[in-house]
Each structure stands twice: as structure tokens, then as C-alpha cells.
Image (cartoon, rainbow, N blue to C red; front, side):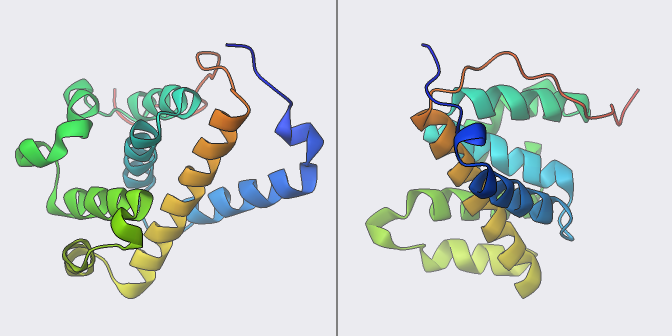
Length: 157
């Protein structure tokens, strides 16, 4: 599928704002590995091939186990693979992304609040908003997947 207009060149000021939001979420108190996992899961939900390619490469470069990548779409069925904090973040990210009946269920909120402070939950929510925005941009402009080269330094031998 050929890509459409280059959104970075067509709207550079808005593009820089999106990059700023993403950068700010990465500078938050949340571990970047958790944010990458959330980016990967939200990109699965949205079907964004470009972002799936990018975040799978970044997660692998950080030393993420292949099994956890393969199983993240079924994370509820394999609780032993993900910490309670990761499960709460995944549930929150899914609820904020899907907005079933235009709501985020109280159950997802309570699960997230058990694991995250108010500040962390706000940071997590903004990270979810950021990846949803990137997914929608890349899907709309048919950004081709496969060319992304991770610049993450491997965290494990």
C-alpha cells in the first residue's frame, strides 16, 4: 500500500507538538518499557502496522521476551507473564482506547488506581492518548511498515 502525503512536512508545527507530547510521556515517572508495552498493545487494537513494527523492534531491543510479545493480545489469559502493574496498565490502555459506550469502566479505573498514583495515571492516560494519535495519523496516511530501525540500546546481554 503506497503512503499518502507526508504529514511531517505538510504540518510541521503540529507534528512537532505530537513529538513533544510523546517525548514528555517518555520523560514521565513511568518506566519506558511499560510505555513501549502499552504502545504495542494499543497499536494492536488499532491495527497500526507502522507502530506495531516500531514498538516490537524497540521492545526486542530493550530485551523484552518474545513470549510476552506474542501473548500480549491475550494478556488476561496469561497473568503469570505480566506483573499486576502491567496488567492494570494494559486494562487501562484498552479501556481508554476502546471507550465502550463512550466510557472507561470503573473496574479499569479501580484496577489502575491500585497500581498507579494520580500523577502516574495521568501520565499513563496521556501516553495512551499519544499512541492513539500516532496510530490514527499513520493509518490515515498509510505510513509503510518495515523500514523502522530501532535506536534503542539493548538493555540485556
